Image (spheres, rainbow, N blue to C red):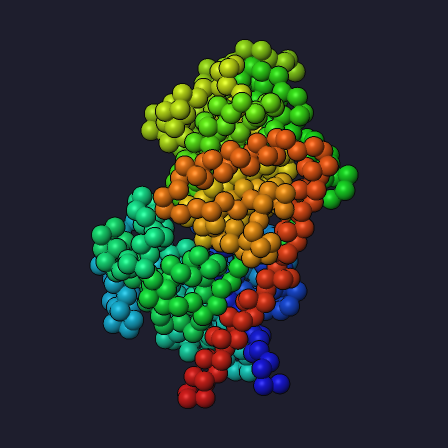
Length: 554
């Protein structure tokens, strides 16, 4: 058929977060992998950085019998790799590459990138060199593997590079292996995130910003340049939401060819009696820690509200969440105990020994510990923004405060020393979550929340919030998601909106709660990868069509 899409027969994907769990992109790749594996059966290869040479990586299962001849040949070519499986559903093939040998040639590589594609790297600093050498190494891996296994076959091959950290790899493949179709996905523009993070209004003035000028002003020239030039030169440029697509068009001067919304797999969400048992266990742990820390008793009727994610105080809406909790404490309608957990990893020094000692006993406590709002010790706590806001609002979990706040400044990996439960194992115990993001290209945290049947509050500036509004028309809390309108200047209105949502939830009877939880879970089902993979099919088709035209001219 004339309109039938071209589909890839082989896919490479490179990301800093392959077998390296550091952020939301890990979730994108690791949950989508099974869908690709089911389609391609080991004809998808993920490429990541080899940070773990000489150490055990729990996410990587090395297989020294796999592709032995190619591994030896790649090594002779100066490409040092370890191969095996990613320890995630689908167990896809993975190549971890050692990028450190290329540092000695970085000036030459940057010179070539400038000559070939106009990539400006003179102002590079920080993590730019490390990321770029990994990107270059990824391109070399693709070239070597393709030449060894795929060149002589009639293969339709795609290389997808994620974020500016892999841009140099995409450009290398475009130049040296033109038969491969290239896709570049930015999950958040580096300059857009920087504008937002520097407290400049992003949205009202987006049309007036010049990306190159702002990159110079904010000392982001190198990252912005590689991102911009990669976007302009690959076969298909993509991002993850409508909100970020507007950024790309204005700041990178390039309209996206496709939008790849972030789905997930729900195989980690318990069902039936297991769900009920895990929710009960999570609530017991949350309430137990609260009692040991604050010295007050909490019934199972306590309303547990939480936020989580990266510690981006403004961008993730942590500031306005704290503001809303302060305002909530003054509301006469508050007739329930409310516990608010802020779960964002900070500069943690370790679990509090006094809290650990209390948790080891079965005693019910009626006196608070010192700092009865902090579960772990912090380095440089005097400059911590959450604690600073609590001091500003005079919040210290006194008996007269009806809304209690608990700051959990660590990764919830099951080994934190206080909760000793994973993030998902605790998420299921919440009644409500709040992600009041100012800058959120997609937003996995609210999506994960509704997947665990926990209604959530988010904003119109998050990709997930925009998608929820499209699905629901205008989302309200009873639908499982409350999407609060947010812009550059309505901070106070957002805080009031969160207060209103929490009060609304607190008034619901058991039937209303049950229905909202059911609606939340039903919405999450619409975001499964089996629905969202169609957007990738569109990107593959766009990229492969351009690659096919190149082949005809070769």
